[in-house]
Image 1 (cartoon, helix red, strand yellow):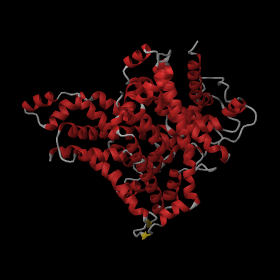
Image 2 (cartoon, each protein chain N blue to C red):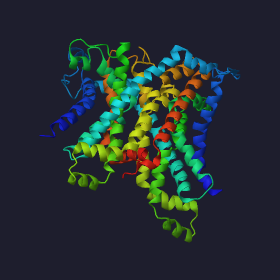
Image 3 (cartoon, rainbow over the protein chains, first blue to last red):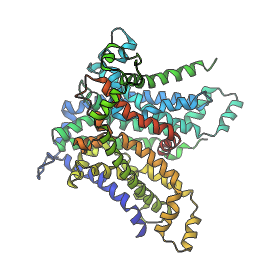
Image 4 (cartoon, one colour):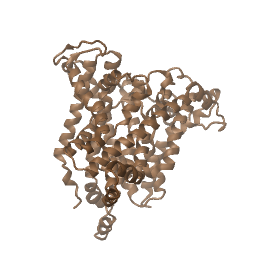
Length: 278
Length: 270
């Protein structure tokens, strides 16, 4: 009986604020409910049908593709700098700190920093000169600007994770490889890449769920205007502005199922045991 | 010579990271007239012009924001350390049924994107009567997560079990062992968790935005966000407020780099 007493607080909080909401959410998603009235009208699959057929609801998936694409740029940039900084470099810690720092910043502050950068006649226009688009005002450009902001903010995280993984590879392996005549590219291809496969695949998973749950940057910078509405902004508005809890719950359940499916597929492709460095 | 492209790429990346912030810093020190007449890349004439910071501080009620953030940080971090270390203590030092299930529950919970379940979490927090009270945020930050549990368990495993046994022979109970032996030795792991979680709570926007609607309950994120509408034409004030919010992060990062890097990598490589 005793050990349960020690895990009880953690478990109680986890169940109350994560598992009960998930179960309730599934229940809500099959009902029409405004969040206030005491009765819920059963809705069958209507809310789900609407998520996939009403253009306003499924077009948010399209927006997430920009962020999904951006996260690959992010992973590539992070991988490059992690590799570069894993070898002897002058001012290594300074560069590491600079590249990582944006990840620690407050999201609202990041939003304002980039609102300022993208202003018409602002910093970016001054640097580029000439004819520039409305970075946040033009629906054809806005999602690229926001996804770019996201790359700026999150590359540091991937970078530090990759760097940590690379540095956990024992140094003798490189020495041995160098004696065998391997150049930097060979070292990357045959030592570093396999050594950090697991963290890269984890980053791809996070990229998929991350690009579907983007919220702060577009919400703060454009409020979802100019075709930049993301899944979570849409769910937020549906739930808290239009009080359609059932519909918003259906959106959240769909998102959750996608994230779980992606994780499950990843575990099928890359089971834990495969990570040993041969 | 071979290393020229390498350093060039590092410098270019650093410039891309720094320029967006540096221009905001410039704007924060400019007078309104100066802001309108100079380009964004021009440094301010007077680096000691703190007027915008004063305006931002008072009109944005930043003191209140920092105060509320501090209360939330202090209470929820203290709580989460106890909740997390107690759970890790049970998992690492006791044998009990369903241990794997408990760990599994925390692991799966990490996959649930928090922003989406708020639709339903909101109803629960509301039914507890906590909406528009600092307790809503505190209670939501109080829980522990798989990353903290792993950091704690890993550290606990490095504390020899013979210490526990010696104390037990001296008549100490399990809880006394936790409080007198384990907890004090856990300091480095606790520091890591506190710093990582502290930064996350300081930066959290969605939860305070959703639950702390009253202006009296603004935390720093929501206090800064309130500048968006009414100050649209006064970028120098917004810039100053943005810098006020960023400054503590810079200080914490410079002082506690090692813990931050450790905490970040410990989380993901497990």
